[in-house]
Each structure stands twice: as C-alpha cells, then as structure tokens.
Image (cartoon, rainbow, N blue to C red):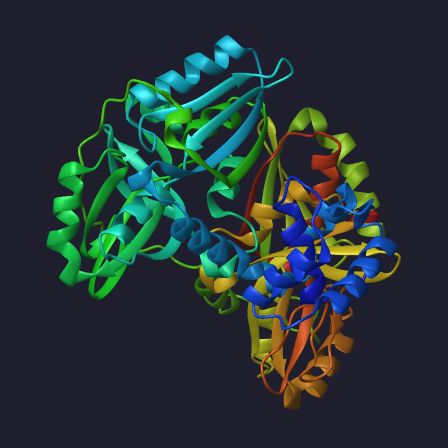
Length: 539
C-alpha cells in the first residue's frame, strides 16, 4: 500500500482512540485542534477514501469506525510522521493525566499463562520495589491474564503539577549489582525511534528483572529525564512526599553514565513496563500496550511494595551511539575494489552444531535470493558451536570512504515490499541508539515482505563517483540510490543529499530464525579478511 498523507493518518488516529463511531463534524473539530484547517465536507471526502481502502467502515448514521486493516496501517504508515509520535504521545499523556485528582496513565499487557503463576510473579516484582507505585490491575480473562500497571509518566505529571517540566530523553536498561543500580547499558532516544524503547528492550530480552529480584544482579527497564538545576530543591521536597517511589537515581553532570548537560538535573526512573519483563524473560507469550489509557487510580488494586533506596551514582562508562561505532568501524575497512580483497566488518551469529546442515541449506537459499551484502560468508566451527559471519553494511561505508566518498548513516529499520511497492515501516536513528537497530528489529521481519534495511545520505556531487565504485564492487548491498532532494521510501533527505537504501547484513540469518534455529546474534562484531570468507555456492 502506498503511504497515506498526514490528514488521513490523523483521521485514523482519531478513530482509533474512540470506542464508538465518530462523525465528520467531530473529526473536523479534532483535526482543527491538531492544526489541520479542514471542514466537514472535506472530512467526508477523506472518509470515503479511507472506506475505499477498507481502512474505515461506516456504521449507519452514527459515523465511522476504524477497521483491523486500518489499525494495522496506522502502525506502518508515514514513517517520518510516526518517528515523532512516541515523543508526542509521551507529552500528551503527561499533560492529560492528573495524579493529584486520581487520573493516571497506565500500561496494559496480556500474558498467556496460568493466572496464579502470573499473580505470583507480579507480586514478587512489586515486593522487590521494582514497580512504579504500588497499584496494579490484574484480571483473569480465561485465555490470558490482563495486567495494568502505572506508567512512569505519572511521576512526570507530579513534577509538572509542581511547576517542573521534565524533558524526556531516552529509555534504556540499567545494570544492577548487589541490588543497586550501577550504570545504563543501552539507550534509545525517544525522538529517534518509531517504536517504544522499553518495549524494544523487553521484547529483545535485554532485561533481567528476575535476576535483580533473586540475586541482586540483572538489568532493569528504565527511563531518563532532565530538568533545570534551579528546580533541584523543589524536586527533593517532592521526593519526600512521593508515593510512586520510582526514582532510582538522580544528580547533576552524570547519572548512571548518562551525561546530564550544563545546569541540569538528570533523573532515572523505573520503567512502568518493568513488571511484564519477567514473563518475556521466561518465554511466556505477552502482548504489550504501553501508555494505553488513562484510568482512575482507585480502580487499581494496592499491592505490597518495599521501596528501594535512591542511589546518587555517577559512572565512568560512557554509552556509545551506533553511529559512533559505525564511524570507528569504517576506519577498519581496507577492502580494495580492484584487488577484490581486504578487511571487512562482519556480523556474527552462533548456533549449535546439530543445526549446521539445516542452516547451510537456508543460508544458500537466502544468498540466492540476494539477501547478503555480497555472495560471501564465514562458517567457523568452534567445539559444539558454529559461528556464522555475514558482511555488515558498514563495510560499504568504509569502502566508499577509502575512495573519498563520505556517506552518512542515518537510520536502520524495516523495509516493507508489497507488490513492488517499498516503504520503511519502522526506523531507529543510528545517532539516537546504542543498540543496533537491526538487532532490535530482527524478530519483526520475515524476509518475505519485510526486510532489514539501512538509510544513508550522500551529497549529490559524489553520486557519480559512488556509482563508479559500486560498478566495480558488484555486490548486492545497495537497494537503490534516490534523486537529490527527494524522499526515498518515505524518508526525507537533507538539502542537496541523495538517499541510499542498503540491505541489512543480517538478513540471511532471518531465515534461520524463521525456521526456529536458536541463535545468538551480534551486529557489526568482527573484522575479517574478505578472502577468508567463502561463496555461498561453495557451501
């Protein structure tokens, strides 16, 4: 499906937030609030377009409702619009909540497990002090348990009601040792992603909440905020009366390894999604709905919670963004397009040796389809494990740089291809994440209609030179190069720049994942000599 324009997406968004059919008059009024000066007649025209695409459905004279197809499209459409939607949703929910009068923002989850098991795990999280507040909703829906937890945005709302405006920086995971927070290990900035950061860390099993509960060591989903240093004393007085007890650390200059900046205070908060993490860690099937709604606080049950001590801790560890790692990796590339050899950057994956034959067949299939950056890969047997090496797309950046062509990495994400129409449906900025986007999205693609891909930019004056290098290289790594100043697959470029879409280097490994071969994966992991790799044809 071609991307929808913003007005159509806004209409779908309005309908998605209503439990009842909505008419053109109400939609027009809401659109005007959002800055779209549009009347009822124009809204009706747009609704007919959405009806024709089966994204909405007319319900008599009551109005329209969004369809399942419409909800699905809302999660994919217009990637740059959704890039800012996480941050916008955070601000909207923070402002619309009113903790003082008992209106709170909640997360919802569906856990497909025995209700008593769910109840016991939830209690252990709360009793260990690893939740936002001491309120929770838990209901037995027969097929699944529905859990409702308080979002950390409620603490932001308390700050806002006391005249402090917290700036929302990032979500991440905090390492714990001896039951205390030590440092942030990974982060994703809210403004750099189309997906919820804490959901990502939980779904990719980067957390270990049960480890913190059982032995004091693990990884906690956490959020990071900053505000002006002049508010520090007011903030401390708020903490004295705080009921949510979700602050794990705060300070100036540096908080758990994150730089705060000049004249600011940084605050690390327990993520409101934390109670659900143990279920994912233990392989339960879970559906996560962050910041899903606003409810009355009194509608939630009170659980026993033993608050943890707030730690004012700095860390000498500095988190590196993916783009920083990429530029350093480029320097290690020595591949020569004339000599057809040199050092390249590879992703690595480990599988049990018993899966080797099946894995080789799948890898052959993937490389025949053109899923690899080139036709070469590495197969290294190590005791009972096999290491698979696939060329990383940053190798291309390094090769271009060797020929004085500066290519700027911008996003990693999911490229959808349906009936020869291509668009990015989820992205994370390389400069806003410490975790490689392709590791994040690995489990969300199938290499049938969705693929891992990168987005880069090159100045228009370097395009001809880049194409000459590509012609000599004869690899598969570049999907397409866009025209100067034109968007490509839904992503805009900066002035005088051409967009470049690269194939994700770990796409061949997706076929192994799709066939349920267990593996560990690390993007951009090693440097190897190209001549040490073998063609898939020789497997």
